[in-house]
Image 1 (cartoon, rainbow, N blue to C red):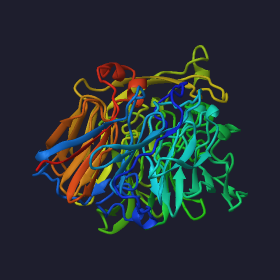
Image 2 (cartoon, rainbow, N blue to C red):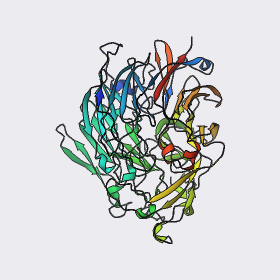
Image 3 (cartoon, helix red, strand yellow):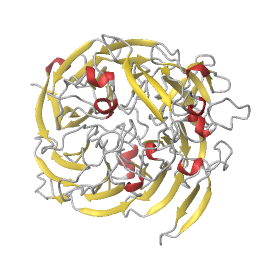
Image 4 (tube, one colour):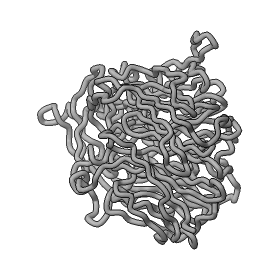
Length: 603
């Protein structure tokens, strides 16, 4: 995970536990297949993938809960994650064969009867001392395949559990947590492989995507997303074979800095079966100090771009090779990670009328991008926040930002004392116009629903050297709100015009994702504790419910026994209360929690 900036040492309070209960939903559960996963966006009786479908649209065709009936939506059960391990809860639940699987803080996962809320089993991963998640001890969800439920842990392991018992089937180490590696993103399943990324960009890790056999955990391929590192494929015996260097060594990175180059893939990936491509976003280059990476000054040959950081990278799942990339923030110097999800959709070109296989991305840097998902060509780009200072706009011909060079944090070697560069006030703040909270796309309205935040930061650069396991920033910062009356705003955005069709402002920052439905609704949660439903066309609030703690997770919906259910994990936390500066102080009245809530229509 990678939203903010400071290492923690968390003590593992519990041993690994896997307590089995009688499931009560049938002893012979059907395994989740590749076809189930590919059809997830169309089937309504379950949710078997992160994003409610591999393309990540977070759209459901269900209509029982709609603009007219939503007023009758009531809670049917709530289950506490329990204990003292509260913190932020950013998990998207999964539902299959009447069982919900939901992860929680401190690398825990629960199986719950989806109809009653009865806990069936839980697994608590044994965490060692010295783990270093930069931005709270969250987990964003699991993946289902065959009879397994699979998730990543804060000590950089991938664990596969038996869905019926919660017992460990396989467990594989991804990397050294003492070097700053961790995992918090939900894996996805592509062609029988579990696809995972890594967190830890603030510690000089090397971002990469890995594919493992989902049934066994054995490696299939690994693809680094920092230029200069070698990719590998693996045979059935685990022997590895070189699979080409990512990019060209030292083409856009100076010296040896690429060896600790960051670009962590901490927010997960999406997959488009139409193009057979995995899309993964990459985080900031390390260190933050762009002057140390040869990126402080513009260069005619773009040699300071530091590929493939702050980018969307398209990878062929059959061989692990990079097919194309699009860098949203070349010469990155503000911690504008490019990890935000790339959502596949059909884009009607406003000039030609041609329908193009595209993807939409609301980047941390404040711009929304529409990109041809077959080749990475930029189709459209526009702001989705009200103020951006680091760039004047995006050149649609070159695809590059039009930088405001005077809004780049100054070179510390040129400062008065050589210890601190010139301070600038940059907008958005490093927590982004959008961070980990997931957007949704509704094909009925043609709109994207984006949880945006309006804030800025004082930011400056400092000298820094890499040391294993130590923070590798070379920068300081203070986040400040831009307005007295609101920070967050849920915005409906037309990708063809770039216009904000409507917005709903929120006093606290928005930090949870969005669900949209054929019932004409968009659901989202607020840090103040409200799960809300808006009319997807007009933005009018038509329903809300107070869950008692902040919501920083995306809702889901599914159908069971002829009824439509809505569920969301609740528990205030994440990066904002840890690193929000003036913003954190402004919302310090918000309380933590840890639960999952489920709703249906009252009859």
